[in-house]
Length: 309
Ligand code: SF4
Ligand code: SF4
Ligand code: FES
Image 1 (tube, helix red, strand yellow):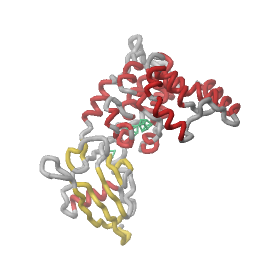
Image 2 (cartoon, protein in one colour):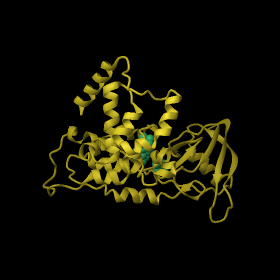
Image 3 (tube, helix red, strand yellow):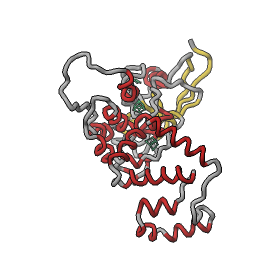
Image 4 (spheres, helix red, strand yellow):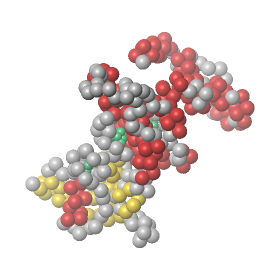
């Protein structure tokens, strides 16, 4: 049933084999009740003769194939409601194959290299296996992941050329899914460190966009980071994270000179002296750490979290 209104869709077009540069194609689509972004793309091909390339399979948020970016936000085309004005782009952080179709093979390879399959200590004995829902709670949440890589498209670290080794949130979710399984005995810390897990800046962008509601940062990445920190204190990322946390527990805020000296060592701290002086002159750092008001509340929070773990 049409509402009489239209959708103005600006669709990214680019064929790297034939086009010199990307362009946009704009079309007006009659807005229907409950219309999704996927319906707009279907209309473009079937009714408007616009041969835009896009990918989908299930149409019901199951296969994870239809990721696109709408007005700058990574979404699933089959689940996102169409709005009167949309700019539809391919998912960022992945090379374009054609139009809205991206090449996910490098990310899928990174996931495979993490060997996200259960590695048991002992052979599987019989069915049903003695597991309670409580044993299984952490891993179960992550099993709803549909591997759509929408979280990976939102990750600012992956847009940064300095972090090409970072496996990205979707691969880390797959790793955490097995690492948190009560029957898993695989060596997961090495895989997480190889995937440069400490490059993650805990910004929550991945959690904010996950179409199935996984809190990617808290339910997967932070749990893996904690395991890495517990098992691998010599890793620079783990050491930095521990010193950062210790400073917050002690003073309620970080103290950059102490963080730098303790995590990077004296020599590296001295080499950054000119930057430290510039920050000091601008009032960005104090010489001595200062304790925030209400520090007892901060310490209570730490105690509560540690008791929970
Ligand atoms: S929380 Fe980490 S993995 Fe998630 S988007 Fe931010 S940097 Fe990327
Ligand atoms: S965690 Fe969410 S956004 Fe990321 S791949 Fe899985 S389902 Fe997609
Ligand atoms: S088409 Fe399968 S998740 Fe969108």
